[in-house]
Every structure is written in C-alpha cells, then in structure tokens.
Image (cartoon, rainbow, N blue to C red; front, side):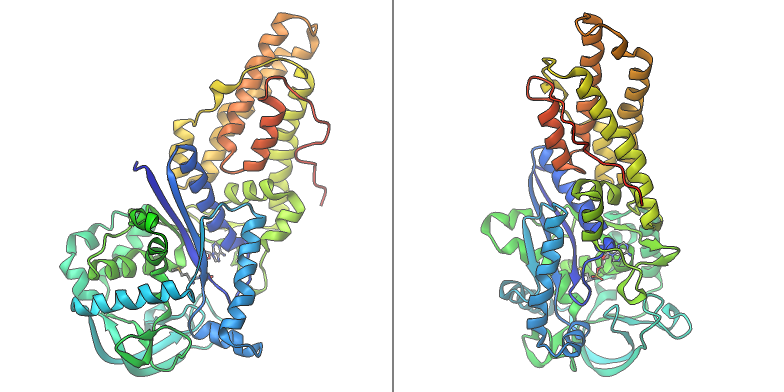
Length: 470
Ligand code: MSP
C-alpha cells in the first residue's frame, strides 16, 4: 500500500435528511480512514453534499426558499449527524463551493478540447429522483423502480453529450476488465451494462437553472452528476498538499450509483487524461421489512436516533455489523437491539466489567498488544466489515469467555501467582480484541485503554454498554 490513502463517500443530496442508509456508507468509510491511520498512512477522508440540479431546486421551491438558502440549511445537518457519529472526515465538500465550480468548468473544457463532447438532441424519460435518464428496459410498469411514487418526465432538448462509447472503445482493455470496480458480483453487472450500451450520456440541461453554467454556452447548465462526480477530484485541488492524493484509493458507494462511479466517472477522467481511481466499492442496501429504506417510503431510521439509544460507538458497531457488503441487509430496530444486547451488553461489556473487577489494581504492561491483526486488517480493507467483527469475536472474545469459565480465576487466592498469570493472559487477549475494534468504536477503545492499559487495572462500576430493554 502507498503511504497516502484517499477515501470518499458519495456526496449526499440535500433534499433528504441523513438516514442510516447514508450512515452505513459514511461509517464504513470512517472505519477505512481510521484503519489506514492506524497503519501510519497519511489520510484524506472526504464527504460532503450534492447541491445542484432539478431535485434540489424543486425541494427548495416547495419550501419557499432559494436553492442556496435551502442547501445552507440542510448541509450542516449532515455535518452534525456525522459529528454525532464521530466520523473523522478531513473535508466536507459542497458542490456550491466556488473552488469546486471552477474545477468543474476547467475539466469540462478540457474534455471538450480533447474531443469528447459534442452537441445533439436528447429525447427520453428522466427520473428527477435519480437525476438520471432512464431507458425503456430500466422501467418497471412505466416507472423508475427506485422511485415508484414519482412520475417520469419526458425530455426533448438540445444538450451536450459525453462521447462515452468512443471513450470506451479507445480504452477497451480498461472497460473489458473494470478491475478497480468491486466487489465481483457488482463488477459483472457493470460489464453487462457496458456491453449493452447503446447511447452516449447527456451532460447538460437547458431547462435547469440551478447548476454550473457550461463555460462556452450560458444557455445550458452542467448535468448534476457530471458536476457531482468531480467533487472527488476538485477536493484534491483545495490545498496544495492534497494534490498528491489523486487518484483516490477508494470511492465507497451504494449499488444504485455504481454505474456513475464505475463507468461514467473513469470515462470522464480518461477523456480529461487524468488518472482513474484505484477502487470503487459498491455495497448493497439497507432494507426495512424487505423494502429499500428511503424518505419517500417513510421507513427510515435516522442516525441520531440510534446514537441516542445505544451510544455513538455502539451505533457505529451496529452499522458495521449489519453492513450490506454483498447482499441487501434487512434492519429493524428489534434486530439492532438484539445485536447490541448479545454482542455488546452481554458479551464485550460484561467481559470488561468481570475482568477489571477480578484484576483491579494488578500491574500490567499491555503495550505489546497494540498491533493490527493482518486478517482483520485484510477483511476491513475489502469492506467485509461484519466478518472483520466476527473474526475478532471468534478468535479473541468468545475463546476468552471460555478460557475464564474453564480457569475460574475467581476461585484462586488473590495473591496466588497462578491467578495473576491467568488474568494477565486474559487482559492481553481482551486488550488486543479492543485494539482491533478501535476503528469501529474509537471512544470505547479509549475508555477500555484507561481501564486496562495505563499500568494498573482500574475497575469502573458504570457499565460500558447498559442492557437495552425495548
Ligand atoms: N448525490 C448522489 C451521489 C453523488 S456522488 C458523486 C446520491 N446521493 S444520495 O443522497 O441519494 O445518496 C446515495 C448514497 O446513500 C448511496 O450510494 C448509498 O451510499 C447511501 N444510501 C442511500 N440509501 C441507502 C440504503 N437504503 N441503504 C444503504 N445505503 C444507501 O446518490
């Protein structure tokens, strides 16, 4: 791995307030950023908000606000939620930042000068919910499958187009392999879509005022996705010292926007003669009782609700434990409480309490346990977050419970060296497990550190994870 690590989340639309679906991508990116920092890397972790386009303009108008006023109200809510979840982002980008707007205009000019933009008429259906054109075979009962409650709009207008098919044919090997696009199942979907590609992409709008103007034609604004994708690159132009972070190491996205990240974005970069990202990882979705979680369906869980209920670190743990790496993950409040009680309250929390009570005052040096287990590390960097947690429990925490129950140190005299030996071994294993868990639960790690690793074991009566009775 390189010494620099640049990880991004999608920039979220401000028409929606943050929900646990957004939080799952953001927490996963935070786990990567914190793990990379633990490995001594210089990290740039980027998140932000996507603020242009028809959807935002409509939402602002429905509240009687100017689009920018509306964005200024919602963008801070994302920042507040991320702070509440202890997300360690380095920069929060907004597509209405003048710096970003300038980079977008420069890049579109470069792509045009390189011969990959042409003018034509667009005719087709547009889903404002997705801010994307839809082909006939993408529709279900004449509607967008992601936005069943919205009617599609028919568009017929002069637009500028990105010569996607030409870019693909000039970079055939790249698009035949798509090796940066993960995981395999989702890459194969993208390869299938590339093979079936029949048209280029419109990258401007004549009837949408809320956007960045096309530099050579002020009657058109830049298509919101073209503008938004560039945030990843424009952020690296903000500080001189960030320039070397490009190309990004990891764009973490949900499967619904994989096409934009695995195909359109690299095509834009190739057309601009810029390096393409090292990896895009498209995870699946959170569902509630089988339905995608979304504001329009009214079934969302807000991140602050779970933080208030379980505490920040437990909320992060629950999100990572249910992270929809490959398949959609059904989450309900009941399931979250079940995991919380079994993994945290009854298991880890109880173990810390039992062991610190037994070993209170014992002198111990745990510095040799501050090491990242290579298997756990490998699982984290391939976004197998539930498995990474499982591994820590299977190899450390659960065997430790068995070990204590077998050895029964509480039956031995407090002065017995055998008791000290058992406790020292147990404390080492526990501390090592907590060290591995720190990208998931950074504050709990600090608390456990204070109880175990400052020289003498300290017992604190307040439980780390009080049991929840719903
Ligand atoms: N603004 C675009 C992204 C532009 S990136 C250059 C967008 N925004 S969004 O607000 O709709 O957020 C989409 C992202 O939120 C998904 O890619 C995913 O990361 C996350 N999720 C939204 N709903 C989700 C679920 N129900 N489950 C899991 N993640 C989901 O698209």
